[in-house]
Image (cartoon, rainbow, N blue to C red; front, side, top):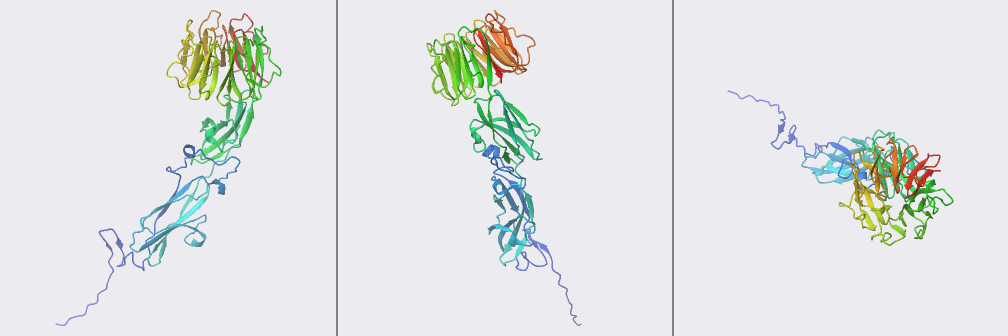
Length: 535
């Protein structure tokens, strides 16, 4: 028997090892003739520990005022944003390096010389990189080149990303009135709009010092384009609007300066001591206060004019007569709140009503009774000093959460931030029994033996002594925006600028002079009244 020669056709066999390595046609992926395994690359826009920049919460920073941001970005538009690149790990045994490239043009693998090499890693387990040198509103292209020990290279896919652009800034307009500023701004047209934040400060440069400014409101509706500021504490105020987009990026409007025009004062009622003789020039006033026989007017330059009875020095404003932002008048003493948060007191001091407690700082509002004084601090607490025979200085616990104060003849009132009223001191006529805060109260006033509360629906609640009808609010009891309580009478200011007066009228204190229009603030003394009218 003869043996026949048999020829065999050798066919490569593909195997999968237990470790999951793919071996094709008898070649190892680590072999020099195979090239490195390319990575799969992804990129995303990030900032800090959040997928979006959290400028509001972290730094309050924004694109500086005066810059002109574009949706396409600019060298000055960097705001700490990052692009994070992530790629799959190369499994090859002969891995040598990853090289991450970036370009603003596509085609990195075809022309890497025109791209920027960001970083090179020699650790095969390195799989991400945060690129924090990117601009807003720019399209970037990224690619990873993997190299092996045989000096062979393989490119990943090219990943593209466009960073968010800064929002289109609004143009802000401020129109100052007598005691209010009407603010309006242009609409942000961007699809990724998130909010407007309106700021007010009493020093210029809000964009550079946001934390020292006060937020007047945050508006998430792009169609909200106006706001009236009626809580100004100083004659000159600065405003700026910050627009924020969905990525947390923001830009500033122009900064507007508003100087209150001031008002004239109308005075009526008893004038035995000249308390109704407003000094010349009767212009530029922004606040008024009425005492027993004297009157105070705060001008828009921060000075106080005082006139009427001065037997105890209640009209002798201390020097320097400047920097005042609020006034209050009692029977024989006066208070002035300065823009540094301190209180100046002058006049009769037989009960210590002019001895402002230490520390004399941080006050935001003042009120005066017959012989006692109140100061509201910026922490929501009330300081009370002076005559305390009726407990009018014993502020009830908890002494916090107050947003306004008022003083009657020998009782006190505090408005809390939940809309309720706390009252203490003399209660012979129920003047310290405040009604339920439903609906909520927004203002309070104290008279000789009665109290007034303005509700948020524009109605007035009155309680306490009513022997002269001082608690009989005339109909319709609606549309009121301010209240004042006098000796045995009351005043209410309506939203149409007219004043309603009721109660005792023995000295004409309820005879509002004609024309009864254009008023924006009221004050009630014992027998005389003051109204602040826009010029």
